[in-house]
Length: 263
Image (tube, rainbow, N blue to C red):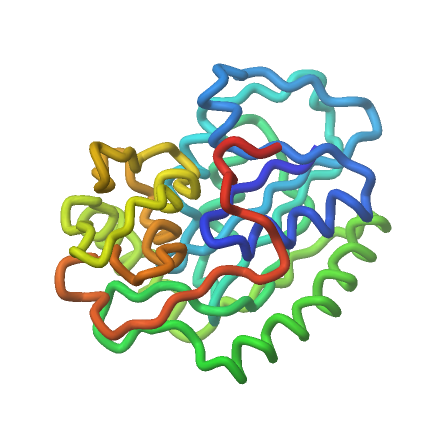
């Protein structure tokens, strides 16, 4: 069973490759919460994987809430792993995720990171990768995921995440500040270029965007995945003044137009 969370498609693509290679079922985390599914029964030889993006050098709050939400019945030391996608490095994501699993009485056996194209654009100096770098990361991710699948197939123990420089500061100081101050949807708005296509509503993984009339309105349950911003065909979705003249990115190898309703 592979549980995954994704906004712009990077982690969904990784999850699909792993689920196919391991012959495991895919479960989209927000759907389980939306449908009220709290318990999953594990088979004796089942592998249990979690795939998610790194947000400010830590797991997204929505992923940590999902772990608090679910119960995995018949767990008795099945092989448990995680794979996180990141633009550059992960900080101490491994530590935070393993701690969250341990609170559920589970031991994480392995963890991996995969460098994928950047999509965070809400701070000065942060933008999507240039097309050359985007292509390079996507091409290299294919081989990286194949290596990860080999490790999972062999049930290898070990953690191989690119923590980067100053991981303690990034995860212990910057990540809490991000979670407290940078996950609000209040600055989102649609400019007059909005054509009412509803793509932002359909792509939101947690159903936080709804169309009222011909304009999107954002609720209070934002995960800061920025899918609504990146999917807009007119670049009409903006976040205050922070996203003007910033680029857009969606993973080109997956279909995510109706992600909240998929899987």
